[in-house]
Image 1 (tube, rainbow, N blue to C red):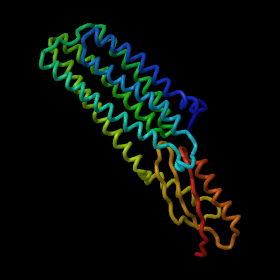
Image 2 (image 1 turned 30 degrees about the horizontal axis):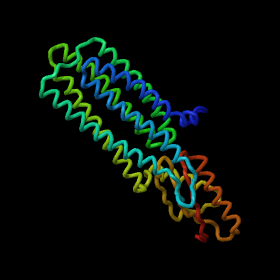
Image 3 (image 1 turned 180 degrees about the vertical axis):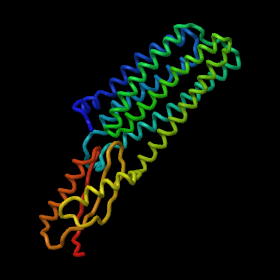
Image 4 (image 1 turned 90 degrees about the vertical axis):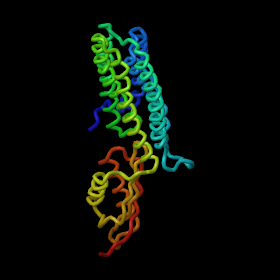
Length: 291
């Protein structure tokens, strides 16, 4: 159930993520350089990707919200999936660079961060990023937006990365300087796993994957409850970006007029759009059935 502020959150979530990522990222880069922490620099690298995802959300949602036209009869929803795929590739490339840098640090025996202030910084970054995550994931789930959800999921990775810095500092203060770059390598694993998950979701969306059996069943129940619908001939539904597009055919009484049949089709469409969220378009056809 959406609250009254959901629509306003949807329009500003990209800008909130952008501003938050820039501020947190700038602070993290400064402290990472100051403390010579590979793990903290890894967090700043991830926050740099957050900035890219926020920009993708801003411009991706602006394009995907455009109405259908002659050149795009199924809307512009796939732009979000394309954007998510691009984000995933950027994350994987960033992870490779971070991995190489961390291996080099271990090989040369570079000293890790030992300042107490680095611990405080890590906790502050984790708290700020967790707040950003909760805000973005709430909006993304309510509006079924893959771009916003991917932005939120990457923020959650940043929280884990920031907390891992604490372990790196404790290790460095104990003389175990290799722990800091080792933590950075561990973070690479998180980045790659999350990136592959987002990339897989993006590819599935671009290939017009069918929606879940649970949603199909829900659609059938709603259609069957419409007065005048005898049975469902066929039902096809696919995910396009954040929206679900439905194409279905229903059987109606053969003794009623075409005008009444059109009214039943319109009622089916209205029932679906009113009872389900994230509906992009509904096409309803009707056939007579004497059984």
